[in-house]
Length: 319
Ligand SMILES: [Zn+2]
Image (cartoon, rainbow, N blue to C red; front, top):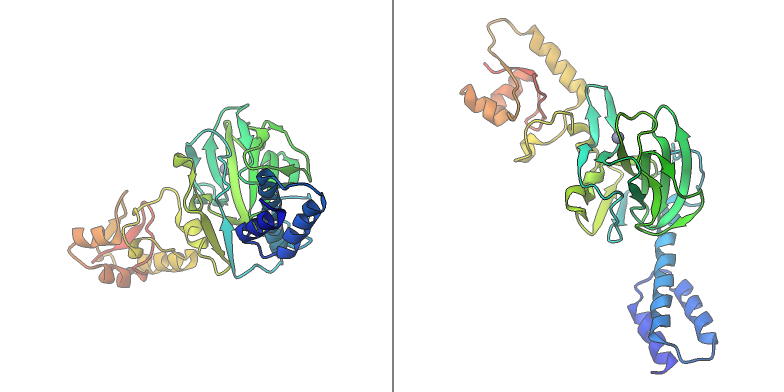
């Protein structure tokens, strides 16, 4: 096959916005006066793809690169919408057992910004995607020994409580490359991997992207929206979670302020009111049925929305 034909094939296979870069690469290769092998074409395509992906992250983060910590982007504008390519995903640890989910932990009155995945000290920790090591630090009161990677797909991932870090800052890594060893350093009680996914410092529930139990991605892409499609689960995953999502009415978020106000008003109700303490597995619908009333009636009495998530032990006025 002639070089020109191979090049046009390569060009066809490239779905690259930065065609100039691709052409540069091809021109460089073409200069060499030899018959272009198909392996060379593959190499060119891969190089062009890497360029494309790296420039995708560059579009998001610009020249903002520092080695100081996890969220170093305060005040930086976020893109309205961002499609993150997840195809290249590698499991960060061999274990598929999530021991703690992302979300608000009432017991500690703070948000857990990642997933805890079970592991033994010394288990290898792998880069979830290709990219570059942005942070390699020690945080005695928090992450312990930790690593932050910036990936070409625009995501940043955090790996906390490591016993050992195996990569250095500014080092390029491939997807699935060992970057550390699992441990129990920092604010941790037992060996595990604390794994976070972030866009411009903003934490996103990794479970929206990865099915750890299945060692797979949820879908080939994840669409981040600055308006906050990812924020709902963050607030709803109050532990323990009630109401398994059967319908929209059972899943949406309780605004803590509204909740407090509702509780105050509930407390102000007369003693004639019939109360119901929320039990495990209950929904507004099941409670309404139990007390022979309607969801709308309960919502009205408690000044909550049909979309509110219930808490274990929450007291509702039902009649
Ligand atoms: Zn954690």
